[in-house]
Length: 284
Image 1 (cartoon, helix red, strand yellow):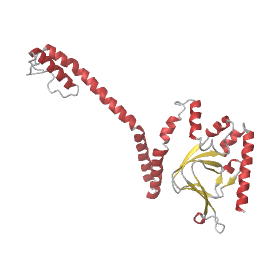
Image 2 (cartoon, one colour):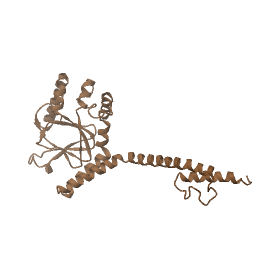
Image 3 (cartoon, helix red, strand yellow):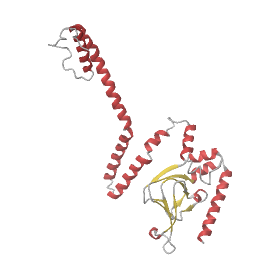
Image 4 (cartoon, one colour):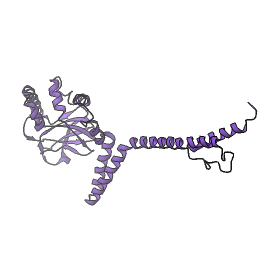
């Protein structure tokens, strides 16, 4: 297309373009002093309308970006804040550097693989109905508690009561989930990671360095079931060989549940005693 555009039309197009520039604050001379818009009511009216609108649009655009960035990094900001507090506390307590590193490694693993901040928000009673919470727990423990021989096929209400009292615990590589001789009052279900079972040496039963490996536990495994039915102490060491997440079921917690499910308790006791008998025969 070719041809000339009239002065008035050109003037208004110029005002329109400059008004658009105002959306980004790029217009140096909004009033047109000394230019073709000087004292032109129509052109100045366009600028007057687009100028405030541009400010609003830019403000909304920037606020949307800031909000999205804030939401995207909300957890990271909280974790960094917690990490700063932890580092300061470790310095005040004069904790050795090697132990400091283990504490911070735990914090990093929880941030990546077991984010307590996120999980606490998810399972906040304000955010979930009890029915939804139970559905999530059943799904999360489907391959551990729900699939174990002690609970598989049992009354669904009994299983739900049990998984509601579980407590997840995190261990670093080299941590001992259980130690020989310590009081045993918890059964563990392995949700993630690998553990090594070490039994004491006959000549020096208290030296873990001379203990012998007799087995491993991986995801879906369990240990310490005898602690649910009798007061005892651990007879072996169980050491984490990787980052580990276990679900702990305490004797006191399940005892309250067994008041309403006595048949399940009796069956579990029989199964535990049978397992303990086989273990004694194998060691004999």
